Image 1 (cartoon, one colour):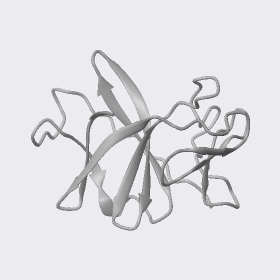
Image 2 (cartoon, rainbow, N blue to C red; image 1 turned 180 degrees about the vertical axis):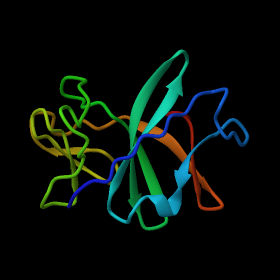
Image 3 (tube, rainbow, N blue to C red; image 1 turned 90 degrees about the vertical axis):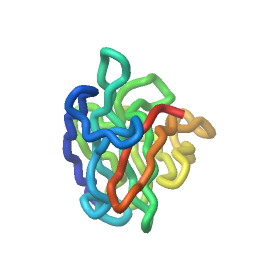
Image 4 (cartoon, rainbow, N blue to C red; image 1 turned 60 degrees about the horizontal axis):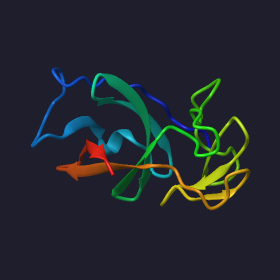
Length: 131
């Protein structure tokens, strides 16, 4: 399964805000069982997150592997294992469940990707803050 990646430049002054939430995309922009990349503000910096769609839900994870704090998509932007329904770190091949970000295979088994708060309002996906 190939990942679909798209960059959303989200800045505090330009963001479509709803009650301190930052608009990322529409729910239908993320295909079922696929991932999408989004860039979100963090103070004066920016970080990337992974959005994962499962049914009508979207899970958000910080794009950093808990093994060495490297982006999961180092040297590319593909987050999914090509044959399994798992998020993959391209650095050391760690595999994470899409539902909760827990590593089930690789050098960081039992650790998890950092969750990012995601809300869906009227089929629009918003980021609010890191959990």
